Length: 365
Image 1 (spheres, one colour):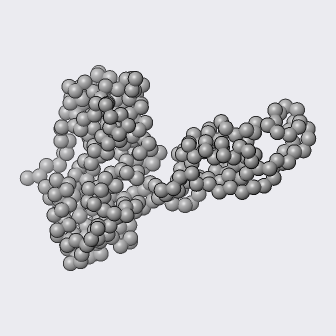
Image 2: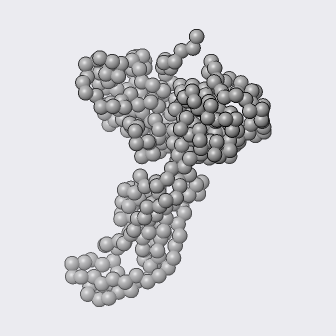
Image 3: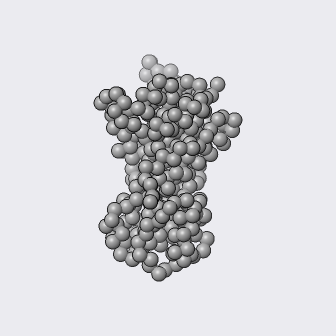
């Protein structure tokens, strides 16, 4: 029996909640994830029309990009659309779930999808996360090294870029003496013992500390395994803000903007004055991405695409880059397709539908 938590687990493999920004509230917003899943409705924003659509379809899961609940509710009286959505969801046993900045920051998330739609090559994170990695060091008897390494890798350690199962191994001598309270794997109680050991070093995202440590302890043969965890200053290129990629060939600025407008199906593209240069290096940060404009300029991108900026941002580019502002909704609507692909790949017979309701609150005259 497929439960809602099984669906959400697949979403979180791509967009771990741990990589969301501090201000965010991604994750389960409302409801019991242990109930059997009847279907998932996918949307950008949760509105009353979206809740009604899910109820009409007989679906009990709504997956959104934007969280319905950013702030704690002080009352639940139906005074606004947020409270009314929560009330209706509770009445009909719906689960509301959001993957927001964790989907923005993930490899394969919003910005990667936009890059794919534009046909960009050599796509990578523009501003990788910092302070998000740990190094694990442990000491294992020679004959158990393969078992321990495999368990660590299976738990998520050992990833560097597109490589997995990465570790460094050195041989040495471990020493210990077991007291009468011990049940040693090797050696005799009360006797000083030397053991040929392998020092295994590997790397892991800090949010995987608990499962990786648990995996280590579950297979390590020693009664009291020795291990160390070190915080690293290295950047983590598997998560972060924005992306940069390359067009297959240079394009005229105006033709590129027109192609962007057509691909995103937006009614207008606001942009800074044309620079008169051809464009090839494209930086993207969907939604409210103006904070990434300085990084896009510093990188040397020809174009920076985002959803919304302030008036002065158009001045601040100073002919250094072409700024293209395509709309918050328009640059993030692809979240629905990402959710659909993740779920359909893992559960091909499960009922998934992209919401018919357009939740964009911005209208164009």
